[in-house]
Image (cartoon, rainbow, N blue to C red; front, top):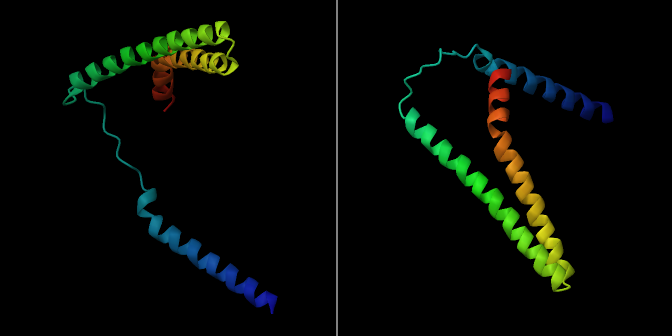
Length: 115
């Protein structure tokens, strides 16, 4: 009795796999890859927005460091462990954000050149 169930499951899986291969055939074809064009419409706007995002990321990292420093100082001198702990988390977040903002160009060009 169990072998019938196993047979039905294996036949169903085989039919499903075969149907997926037949239907996915056109999707597995070569995708056209046109050459890059330097005259991208809106390219200047994209560059400007990326510049704004760069400065916003650095400003957010500095704000995180300043907020964390203030919270750690208030927590330390006010004998509040929870405020001091929260301040340390803000400082670590600010350091991480500064590192990511600083390495964003290197990461992007490495990923782009890897393809």
